[in-house]
Length: 496
Picture 1 (tube, rainbow, N blue to C red):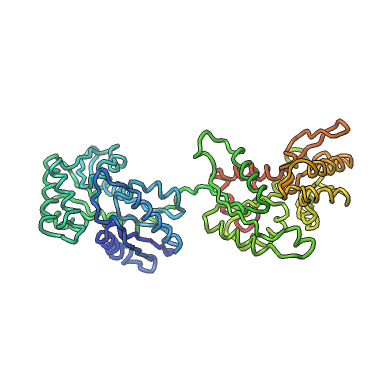
Picture 2 (tube, rainbow, N blue to C red):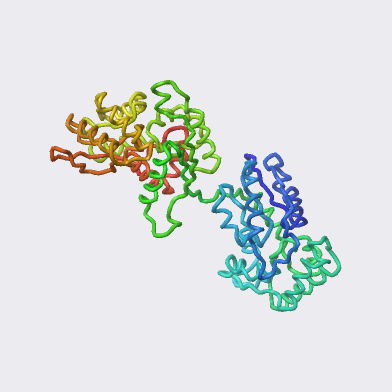
């Protein structure tokens, strides 16, 4: 059996957390195969640990504490997280949506155990805090098959005192008034005809055996949770696609790319859009300057940015910079997640929409052209590329890097005229389709199937940024995400 590492969150109820840990390490599966299980118990001071969970209590501090603990355990590469706190399970799904490590569902463990021992339609008593009782947590998990009842008004007050009072279980008093109060509550539940008494506070496990010896059918929640966790390896949560974006190459192009992702997403509400995490890092050395003039190498900066996106839980990485793709082949083998190759997707898009039309014009930085990355991709797809002659290539570079170019914040005037001249030049040379192969160029002229030329004809302009955005939105579909996660060592190319 492969080793499975569990992270146990303590501090919400110190004694109850320790009790769960004890029951984990002494459970039969663990004792039978101790090398297969690894446990990390982490506990930090939680300021509201002694505060009674009444109906008006706020969960904010508890949520943030638990989330920080989950993040800490995830960084230590646990496979599953155990959360021994019923109140915290009222917001478990909120936490899970932000985590890649599964939180083992304590309520699901309890339901599974009850289904084995209780008859359908049985009356189940619940000993819980006022907060958990009001939250409807037990109704969500049990009401479809069982009837749920709670102690009456005064008896519920006994429960709260038994747990949170000065002589309560949380204060370490495991006998005396606390037990008597809980016994009184169990007695009231039995009068309501309960078949089993379920714990709604983890501290009940600390006095469970005492109550059982008195004849009350109380279940040991921590023992059930421990047995469930080690017997059934928790499946990972449904993975939510998160797109990592290497930003700042250039800054305006990054914003343009994000806008196109949003506009390409079929959505009727905020939650329908995909998650994105961006590192806007304009300090990445200029890619063209390195390729043409051997200035500062951007490889390490690009790689470091990708690794940070990877550590942020990105499922795939997009780099809205054509020239940066000259470095992707070197970086990809050192990443566990794929870089979506904008150039590959652009050529695939052209082939699917226009066949192997020849030639296809390429307007890009001189660095991109010199690297040959677009040409290699096009040749493999049976497409021939055409680039501007030197005077018109200078116009392209001026439109991008010039004093009044796009990188200086201009999209009209000299840069627009220079780019139009380059487009006209390629069209007159025979190009029917032209790639705007620098992510700044679509800020001047957008993607269109009919760019009007001076001679009255038209040409197709393809925007790789838009192609990449549409593809990333398609990649967020579950089946595409699964394919991407299986091929991290290659640049992903999946038709959206």
